[in-house]
Amino acid sequence: MSEAAISIQNVWKFFGDYAAVREVSLEVPPSAILALLGRNGAGKTTMLRMMAGLLRPSRGDISVSGLGWVEQNGSAIGVVGHGEWIYDDLSAQENLEFFGRLYKVDDLAACIDRWLETVGLTRFRNARVSEFSRGMRQRLAVARAFLHDPRVLLLDEPWTALDDRATQLLSSLLRDAQSRGRSVVVCSHQLREALEVATQVAVIDRGKLIFQGPNSDDFKSAPEDFYQKIS
Amino acid sequence: MNDFLRSALTIAAKDLRSELRNKEAMNAAVSFALVVLLLFSLAFEPAGNPDVRDMSGGLLWIVYLFAGILILNRSFARETEGGCLDALIAAPISGSELFCGKVISNGLLLLILELLSLPIFGIFYDVNWTRSFGSLFLVFVLGTWGLTAVGTIFSAITATNRLRELMLPLLVFPVTLPAMMACVKLTTLILAGEPLGDSVIWLKLLFGFSLIFSLLGAVLLDVVLKE
Picture 1: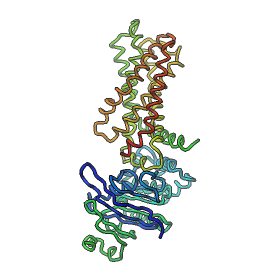
Picture 2 (picture 1 turned 180 degrees about the vertical axis):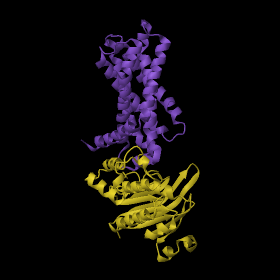
Picture 3 (picture 1 turned 90 degrees about the horizontal axis):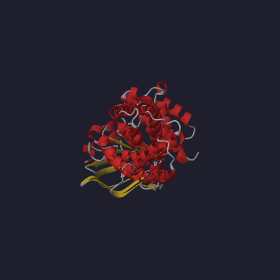
Picture 4 (picture 1 turned 45 degrees about the horizontal axis):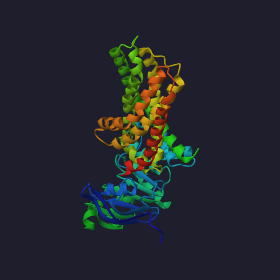
């Protein structure tokens, strides 16, 4: 069996005395889309931030693409975070150029053209992001995260502010990434969208992992009953 | 060009481009510098007053220090909008590359401010700064380097603090005191047209200070941002 793309071993995260994540162990295999589900405040974002290298686990270890938390330098990871992580004062093109240079993307100009086309922002490439709608900003954030073709994609509530067409586009991008051997973790409380694309499901509640397993047609057919089915 | 320098210059270019677009920091800093220079000139009546020459270095660096804080305050505050600081932490760049990029952009902005306000200072205070501009420029470069090295570290520390506008000067002023003393001493001597002579020690202090805090910042920024 190939090595897990993401391996989380007995991870705890404390904020002061409060344990936001409690002894979570989880493995995400290559070519998998894991939906990390849970209600507000369950600890999903904290988990994702630790995987992205933004928060150091208080205990335990997280390795992504075979590298532990300390060795991780971010080049193998693409993140769509809570904020869009894009600069308002710059244009869409300038934002992608900036991040493309930091990630040392080969043939950057062509890559930017391709991603602006994919997310439907070619017409707005020279417009300042401050003039963009929330949905357009989110699409640019998706392009930024995919730009360097990362081996692992971490997405926090990625469907927020996306219309139907953009939601479908994102879902197809995730499936495409999976088919190319990429691993994806999607944190969401939007069950329908998350279960639609996921191959694996994990549920976190008050910092503790309470369910982990493969996704099923049963979950997909009635996402509103998902929490009842796993309890 | 190696990867380190390329990443640092990419960050510096992004900051300068952002500042060129909205001029948030520069508008405030240049206006502040001009107003303070004007107010000091009204207070001290420099025309024909030989004492003002002795204070000229101090006056000039007080203005640069306070105006510099306005520029430094925006440096990391700009990154917190839209969560861009997270994007930089998650990106495959080291804290030292980020620090170096920020010092370059902050330093250039502060140097522009200094060069813009110097002629105004010369007119208001009846000081001839052109005859020894080379030495003066060297002091400006070294002083700006030291101030931005310290300011960039503290700007990162206070970036997510609600009271960052208050905290940054409180942290930066005491730490930069040795560098500012050197800047004041050297600038006063140069503007008075006196030889540096034994005062070269102040230049060495300024260089050493800037170098030490640059190395500290480069090493510490990862810790500051990730912990």
